[in-house]
Image (tube, rainbow, N blue to C red; front, side):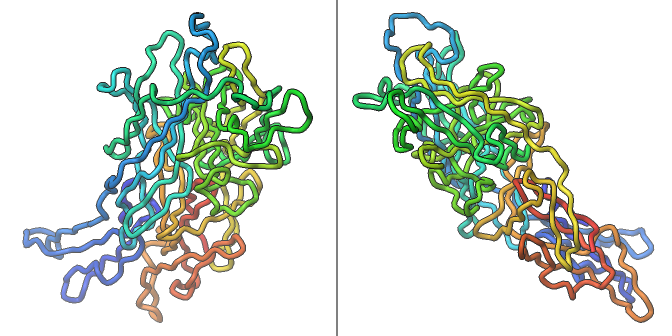
Length: 491
């Protein structure tokens, strides 16, 4: 068995055979992933059957090919009275909140026969002088990636930043992907939004944030940082009923805070906080759970990337790519999408502050967040139909990845931080648990077997069950809700 590091779905099985001439052969029966095994005599003494050198070749590691593009936007209005000192309050306008939209990072990854690959998360960096750069945190897009040839383009993502009271503010921000740095955004070049929406804008009286599910008070995605819970955001007018239309540009200025600490949600993973991550984004991701076509991602309001949340110091967040902003939801409401890696109960608020003061801030009521950590289980067989269960809605929706539209999953951990996982195909092999394969006097050949997996009516089935013996058990991996699920030893 050959299992590439960090890619258990790409395991290769090799039947090492001893011929009548006492030669050893490994090329007759190899199945599974993209690793290849060869053997050759090394003419060294020792061993009953001689000395042999086994060579294992795996695909080259992914290589960054294009740096991401970065666009910044200032979300808060300037102080009405700049002569007043910073109050130290969270939403004081002396410390602006910014959103940064990231898109276009490319990697060379696809190899013939490769089932999965993993990519490092991007790193957001800030500078106070334009020369020395400090890491702000990691950014993992949860929008749909695409593939052209051997090049993967990651989906859009966003993060937010705000200086802490007394902290020297950043002057410049960039994002690095695989060693390739984006363009630099100079914060001084970002125009502030007009105070209170500008001339003739409808006055706002309040902001609301609810879950766009049966339980409006609770957002409960899988706790993997990729599965999303859909939300609705609405601005209410001061002098009329209903809600302000979503075309109002102030929907693009909404950000989020942790309700218990009042700390801003940035969309960045920071060291030691992987399991304490929540993010809200206007971009519809790979697993939006909003009842719409799952492949609509990549546009505003049908977007793709959830913004991660970091509960330590960082500011608001709206995730998305260039041109980001909340997307249209129900009439008068804007869609947002939440992700978390935490299974602990927490709450957050939506915030709008274009008043130019620290006191006239619109803050929503608390929205509860409880990520699901329930184990994903399987039922059925690979021959008759295999299902996954344990997702927030019960039955899990299975993903059919392809070489042009790979499936996205979280391959990170508390130790490693966020890691982008991509799956290019579904595949099944002879189960490791039944090795070595048994033969009989009637069947003296029992070869290793493999088959593609087909998803029909949300059930996974072998595309070619005939290649397996009737009693063979099978190993496979399935993709759902942002998780790669290993399914071993099934019928």
